[in-house]
Image (cartoon, rainbow, N blue to C red; front, side, top):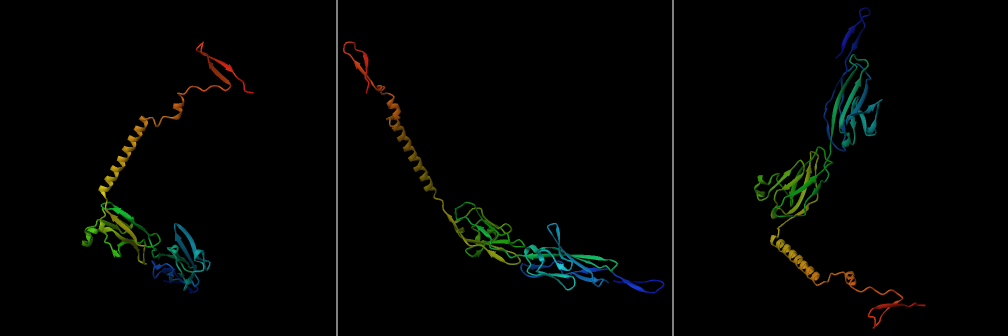
Length: 296
């Protein structure tokens, strides 16, 4: 809106305006690697060549995007000014998700400056998630299957499949799975069995999905087997019997002297004769005397 003023003597008038901005879409949402338009439109201004600036606000930091009539920073080479004030970005990536502020300075207007903020969201398709499935679980035991995907945006939700058939979030809510006891957390990607049954054996895989697309991991086999309680008890008894026999054998060997050290036997032998000395016992005296002999 313009205000007409006149000077008393000359009768000349001039227009004093106020710059105002609007946007056709303040919350654009695009997929990664597409192009994005950040709309910034001047609705009122009396300045023919206003100064245009675009700034990016992310992680509490503000950087220039368009300044001094050229693209700046990481958008250089893949963005341009569209029309007079809007901004177009090609080949957007997840790093481009941010707030963008359009600032216009109109020196000839009474209200010289106005700004508008555009919130750009770049959606990213999930990649194949990482799945963890136990290979073998005994009947009646608890089992937990994990699924995790970290690239997709918005954050994906998870679903599980067994032998290519989708599983419900809660087995108790579906008559087909009333003999099972599992719960799926679609936010964390876990599939938890409180007590597995033989019917729970099969090929399992997980699907991660968001607004852009979905991806799944490779199927993995989980086997549920019966515990042979009788065999386990029998094996324990055999081990105990073998240990008892070994203990008895060691005790018998000690009693028969098989483990007496050779040094103990030698300690009972008479001391050896020193080299170069012969001991001779006479019949008359009945005692010992020695005679030295020297070896030349």
